[in-house]
Length: 320
Image (cartoon, rainbow, N blue to C red; front, side, top):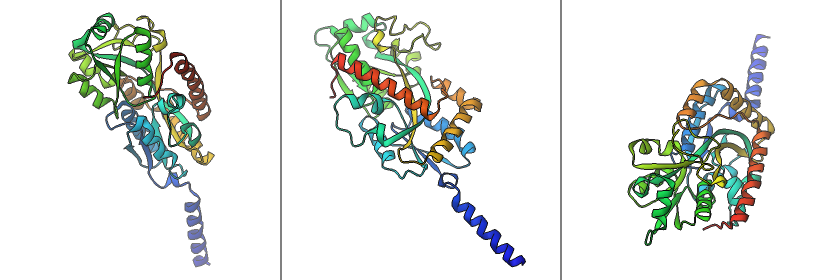
């Protein structure tokens, strides 16, 4: 009898183990669509720390940069939909690039499903301080004969790319677009004098602004940043089109079972409500912590995509 009970118990444990979702037994991989050290990578690592205990599993961060975020997007879109591979990415591939007429290996909005927005943040218009410390000074230098300036972005169709094209359209400044894999490379080239300006999260340039090597000419949020109280907003600078806030989103392959999506969503919501270390870490990176369900994240992305479709059409912005 005892032997039969032992065998039955062993069989039950084996069955329960097999029934557990794979996500409860193996590491969760967060594929980041930007380079190591980028603001998206920082966001992913903060969330990895917050999620590992709530999920009861290791969370591994893997940067997969390139093609304006599409390298990471495609990697997750083609991954097994088992809840073990997720994407952390910026909005360009989801809300902007689809409206530029560029060929895309996958459609992010159908190949992936949103889980949450993990961080939101305004941008800073960063310029080589040698070209001016105010917007009028920079525009004057950029329009001077023989200026021949270039601007950086984190890829075709990124918010930084479209924002700079809008800046050019509204100010009449001519600059050549140079896409980078991520903000660290762009910052290095700006310090070397090869890049005149780019729109970037504050965390990528804060130290250089403080040291006087890079000038913050305006910010893109609805209000001035507490870290840069003397820097005007885009609206105050006469560029209301550039009042935009970026986000870093969490996505799973579209075919992921609803139970796996819900499990990850619940862990994210719990961390957003309870984890002060997460909140503090994002604040140090210049980001806010939203609290969004999958449905709310999907609605936000769709609404933003409609806005950018209109802006791209009205400004006549084309892919490089």
